[in-house]
Length: 575
Image (cartoon, rainbow, N blue to C red; front, side):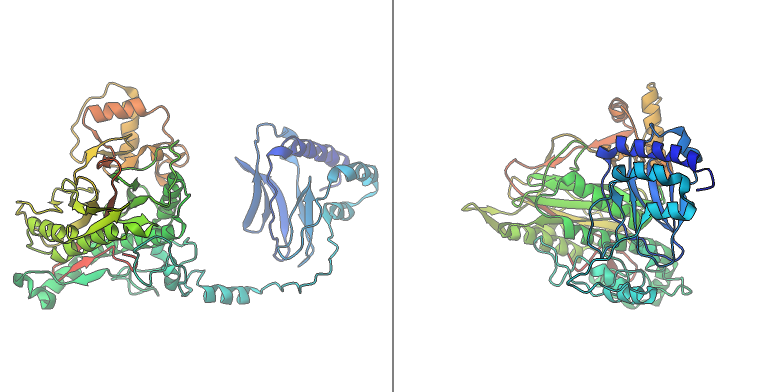
């Protein structure tokens, strides 16, 4: 601490006064400190004072506006003997070895006066010993665990599948109904992912044309042949295989986004259970989506807000801030979210239920979706896909509270084609028999989604709106309100023509940290948002609801019509 102990003690007292003033706001925490030539030091950041050891920062939050200016000039560092177990005490906070029993907190108030009386006789080394109080080792009935060497720790990590490049064994099963037999929520550990997931998917796989990387290629989706006799030559055509190789970068983007979606949703299946607040569920899922896709504004990120529509609400519901809706055991929830790489969107959804009485409803919709996928293909008419879906869906019925309900298709909800940065690209895939003879074409991307209900089979817009999207062909309209101009500029640079929600506008990053940092939060924007909707630049998408008291279910997959076959990109072992 230098030779001026009098100056240090003056500053040290200021430290203690500050800590005592905020003592009620601080949370006790433990941290294991282990490294050679450990250097601990306190330093100030924008929001925290941190105790630092090497690359790991352990800290506690507190308000900083009352920190005395005198503290800025203090050199607050000390050295610790090599490999020494110790406890650092400061105002009742102690950092304990994880294998040691917690001792009583050290009360520095009881010792501070004695410390001040003795300070004039202390040298640096002795004074440090006062701050680094040696722990008296207690005899334990159980033998204390030995610390693992780095090599042993790495071996353990590899064996458990919890580190990069480690191929572990999946073992966790989800609680929700009708997921695939043998589906594990931690399937990704077999690919070297951590549990919970933390490694960007791009670091686990490579593109198909990158043979230099020592990684497997992005997983290919489920392959099915195109229907119709006119397509029988496609699987073996050398010319069409060559055409596919020319589109390999497109397929890599789609497979990359699909693998992110699979890993995010599998992990979500481990924590989605009765009692969770929907806003917490969506936030957690979306944050993981951003992390695994390495969110980078319009280049990579979330495709659209997480839908978590309950019961009679079929689609387009996500909680706004302040909505404290909690998932219940008897709820039927549709989880619908997307991931995009360079505008290539993967749109996939499944239904969460815990009560087995809803199994026939879920099975009807799941089987209908698979029937639609089987019927889809190059040169297939959209009306034929809808007819195949309806035939399967309406062959089911479900018994609820002693009454039998036929499962109906929600006839005014459809699947859709997907374009770059355009979730609805123009073609609609009906889920009932229709007269639309539009054909599917080569290399088109479709979301095949079906909705079943115990209600009337027709939805209307209702409830508070949360989903919005800038019109892909938005007109140029002069805006008079400065707030509307500001909000439109934010939407253009952050979301473009991708869907967004109010909850994202109210984040500190305004929906994208890569674009806005922590300075993107929109304040008092509702009037500006309404103005953009009124002039047709932004389209609101309110929740879509059937009759209250009924139950709706949804399953959805994204597929690409490759020249030789169709690839169900979002298929997983869960659904």
